[in-house]
Image 1: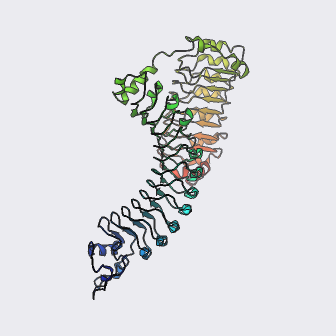
Image 2: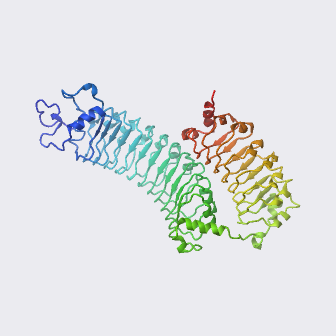
Length: 585
């Protein structure tokens, strides 16, 4: 919007908005006329300077040939890639604007009049030379996208929390040293880019952004990540590359996290706790750190497609890595691996995974052949009533383990993390006392009838095995309260579970279950938790809403279209209410 210079030529109502001495780049009148009808004007890449910017836009006056009833207010104005050094306060004369794009100019400041564009939904001022943002911009209550990247900002206004409808915010490539605490009020924000700044920490309150799906903190000075970040249930992509992190945070609530990028840090240890909740993770990038080992729990990441561990200090890999069913890319170059030949590494991911799987098949060393490991823990048996034989990678449980408990009844058995292909038959000898059995992380493909004799059983853990079905005889386990069948190969909900009415918790995530019977579930009036995440449910029956005993119903990661993610994010009560509302009258 130019200042009037020179005297208007008679008969030309627009002449007053041209420079008299230097006409500047011509803007075709056809473009102006089209803008009057469409409400959109694109003047990008025309070499405009401040004098010609907005080039008499507010004048858009009608000539005799113009039909006023066909005119419309300007709603979209693009002035990108010009030579503007400032915007005039007269921008307030365009109150109907919903989009203002002035990226890639030479702006050093913004006019306070921007705050009067109450209809503005997108403001792009990226790739300029801005040193500050006027407080008045915080008045743009309908703003959904604010792009401030590649400027010279060292701080942001405290009133940022007023932009409650903001969905996209990019402040990357500036000089920010901290983030306003009012960011916590941006509860509708979906994408937040803080990359390439000078941040040393993140405010814990950032966890209140319950809609945030993408958070990019690449290339800052972060030494830690607030633990509350792990409660961001909607988070799908997290970028922490090029910081100063010494460890990864735990992510107990980030059930939807698909990508975690934390390369070029100083991470030394990768704990099982860092990984065990990341059921949806498809990309894990940890290159250029100081990681010394990979835990066996990496096999929990059944949806992992890309694993980048290049340039670390890893000397050996867990052979079970070969069992990750979706893994297509594995980068290991730059590690001092001792057990894998270099030529094998160069053959590619699939050959490497095949090699790792082949090593699993080798006869494992069991406690039968290692006296140091075969010592039976009588203290645990007599005091804790616990029979423990876990994490041995054993194909069988030694007979002397069962011999040792003949005169000492045990209530708990833990045979997890071995290579068992079947449930040890002698487990039936413990039927008079056994309450809790853990057979997780084995290779069991069927449940034996011996297990069905354990009439006192209350807790059964069979996660991470090869099960496809359960025998009908399990109906005899009338006291069973908790069963964990996650990470198996069930294609159907095991029918026998509907008849074990004492069940309070059924964990069936990460299988291939295609349907559930809501009428049979309703009969299970003690069932409080049902986890069906990451299965193949194409639809959720509305009658499931009548299962009023459910306190926790987890359905994320299935291919159904309704309920939508926004409904699921509101919690079980809201989901059940939604389903009830869809039951045909």
